[in-house]
Every structure is written in C-alpha cells, then in structure tokens.
Amino acid sequence: MLLERYLPSPRHIEVQVFGDAQGNVVHLFERDCSVQRRHQKLLEEAPAPGMPAERRRAMGEAAVAAAKAIGYVGAGTVEFIALQDGTFYFMEMNTRLQVEHPVTEMITGLDLVEWQLRVASGEPLPLGQDALAIRGHAIEARLYAEDPQRGFLPSTGRIVHWRMPDESARVRVDAGYRAGDEVSLFYDPMLAKVIAWGEDRERARQELLRALRHCEVAGVTTNAAFLERVVAHDAFANARLDTGLIETHRDILLAPPPAAKARTLVAAALAEFAGLCDAAQASAAASADPYSPWNDVDAWWNGSATHRIAMTFADAHGEHALALAPRGKGRVAIAGDAAVLGRDGGAVDATFERRDGRLVIAVGGQVFDAKVVPEGDIRHVFADGDRARLTWIDPLAHAGEADEHGARLTAPMSGTVVAVLVKAGDRVDPGAPLVVLEAMKMEHTIASPSRGRVVAVNYAVGDRVAEGADLVDVDAQDP
Image (cartoon, rainbow, N blue to C red):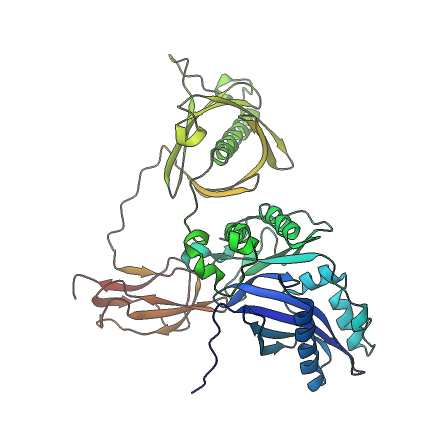
C-alpha cells in the first residue's frame, strides 16, 4: 500500500532547469500548469501568479539541487505540487524540453533549443543565474482535436480549413498541422500551441483571448471555444488556480454552446447566396445563351413581387429560417424571425464583398470578416471571432426514417479495440463495461445503458473502428 498526503486545491508548479557538462546548473524560473483536464495540462503560464520572490528562490534552488544531485546535462523540468500557502513537494523530473517551454522563452527572451544544442556540443551554459531575469508575463493554451462536450474525447479526420492568429512580438503559434492534413488516432491530439505575452498577466490574458478568437479549424472538433471560456472565466482571470479549476466550474465551462448569433447566421446565408451566384455564373458561361435571365440568381417569381430566397440552418437549439432578396451586386435584404435578427421579421440590408477567400460583411451597422466552410450539409462558420457548426437544411430533401435499433452501441470516436468484455448471449446490467477503445493516448469504455442481453459483438481486439461504428447490440427487451 502506498500512502501519500492529501493536498486540497493543489497547484502544479514546475521549474525549468539547464545543466552543462562543466557541472553548472541554473533555473529559468517557474511555470504554473494548474489548469488541467484528464490530469493533462491545458493552460500554462510564466511566471506563476502570486509567487513571492522568497518562494521563487526556494523552489529554484530545490530544482537546481535535484539536477546537480544526478549530474544532469541539458534541459529538464522539475515538477512540484504546491499548497495554496506556498508549501511545495517534489513530484517528478522530466528530462526533456517540454511542450510549455515557449512561455519561459517569452519571459526570458532566450532560445532554449539553442541552449540545448550548445550544451550538447560541450559548450558551457550561455548565462549564469545572476544574468537571468523575468520580463512580463506569458500564457500558453493547448489547442486539441477533442470535444469538451463529450468528455474531451479525441477527434480524428481530415482538416478542411486551418487558420491561426497572426504572429507578432506578443503572439506566437507553434503548430504541426495545416489544411489537408489528417489527424490520426495514433498520436497525441494536440494541434497547436497559442502563446501570448504581455507586460503583466492581465495584458497577456487579453492577448491570448484575442488570439484564440482567431483560431479557425474545420474537419475535426477542437477545444478552441472551451479554451476561450476558461481564459475568460473569473477564476482564471483572478488567478484562483488549482488543478480542479475546470471540474469546480464545469457547469459554466462545459455548458452547451449557445444558439447561433445573428451575424453567424447572416454569414452562413450570404456564403450560400454567393455560392449560388458562382454556380449561376458558371452555368451562364457554359450555356449557349449566357445572357439568359434564367441564369440570374434573384427573387423574381411569376405573379409575386415579394418572393424571397428561403434558407434554413439548424443548430442544437433548433432551426433558424432566413429569407434573402437580392438588391444588386453585393447587396441583399435579409429577413428572419426575432431569434435571427433581433427584429420582428423586418428585413435588414446587408452588403458583402469577397476578399482573400473570405467575406467582408456589413449589416445592422456592423462590419465583420467571415469564413464559411462547407462539409457536406455542415457549415462551419467563423465570423469575427464567433464560431458555429450549422446544418444546412435542404428544402428538397426528405427526412430519413428514425433508427429503430436503439440498442446499438456505437463508437464515440475512431480508435482501436483493446478489450472486448462480453460475448453474444451474455446478460448485462446498466453500466456494465462492454468494449474498450483506445485512441490518442486515451482509453474509453463503452458501457451498457440498460439491463439486457448482448445480441452481437461486431468487432474483436485489435480491430480499428471509425466513429459511429456499431460495436455491440444489446436487447433491452430481453432482460
């Protein structure tokens, strides 16, 4: 039996150390990595908020002593768990340069990879402890291919749209993906790191919020909106940090996405209209009569002067209907219910122009930039920092029949079957584990939702399955 002291509301604080072959070791200050989910870091910052100089010195000296005790050479991280009163305990040492090293680089102005290469070639450390200083504050957010609304399950697939915030002296982006890349189930789901610097913590936090609002990824689900919620939350803003922050405030941080905003719906409708115009132009160019009025996209309707082009989009909150009336090149009148435009059905004028593959839209006194990425019937909408996943409702499509097989348990993510715990004919109780999937360093157990009999097990250990695959059938009518 292993007994450890229980630490209520602990903080995870680590110290960056560097050693050379000559026996010199320095620390490059600390990082606070308390904001975590599934015991994995999500936000990291340097220096740690509320760190008195005396405690910083004590933690730094402890980290240096640990590295010297083993004759350590190179970059390393000594990790501590700390109480809110500042008492700290050694946890582990990572013998490498870690994911969160950019925040240390941004507050020290140093290139730690360069330091690694110099030390590896036998050179002494470029600077001594007295020459190292902290300048400003930096915060890093990890952008993951995962769905916070589904227990942070990883998301796989092909990236159909990728856009990161512009980099500057205040914003840095370290990314390993681009549009067209495949996010597979074999690697960690981290897509990018977004790092922001400011003269103090609040300025760094605001810079990070602005940068996160301009992270656009479509094709896989990401935690971008969730990161925004955490960074904007009062607990984080006021540095009330501990490793349970997300769980403590889960009702707010993991609340369902709000209904699509008016400008998001307007952007989706105008992008759809622009697509219709493109198709009509191509059709006209290919026809024998390019000037035929049948090639026009307008609201003319025989016998009606008020006909409009109807469009309907749906999100988790229901369907949203809009009606468009073209008013000339780049001008459209848009009408909708109060939920869409904040008016009682009255039309508003909107103008749009295309610029660098995006739409610049003016409506209701607002001008904003938008990108709409189609993926089948799904429309990924990025509108001036807002993001939404809408479904375009085809007015000519017939609704499919409902799935009658309510006992089919499907894969919530793509992955590999690592355990099959039942066989056909077995009786199971509610919550009984049936199959275990593994993907991106994470295991997920599929459990029975009710009492019943296993009718079929459709996959074996070692099989790779896609999201939505029918794993196990349980007959709840045969308890």
